[in-house]
Length: 136
Image (cartoon, rainbow, N blue to C red; front, side, top):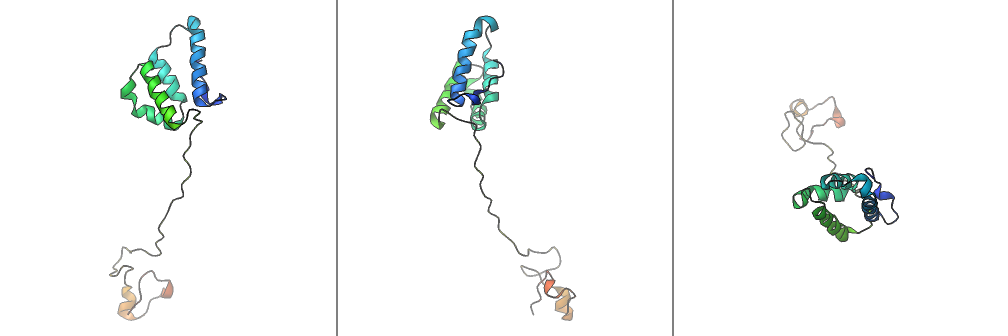
């Protein structure tokens, strides 16, 4: 009871949570009363990522009061789907701008930078592979 698996329930996370609460009620004579803070901690630890994030942000609204905590969880589940399997964010492709040649840290003057050797002598040992501009 202290390590429930809400995810394994047929109806999803919410159903697993409801079943866990029913088990706690049935075993209350043996367990005694689990404090609100303990029950909140157990549920938060087993909550899907997005719900857990919501609960962390909303902590001030329920404190250590399990009844208030239950209202916060219920309202979240109603708004985001009661079954609520473990949520993972979809992969989003990154858009990357490709920069063919950037500004050098040398003595360039244009956006690409000017090859001073080519400017001064008309020659550059790197030729077309030079990272600097050979424009005249």
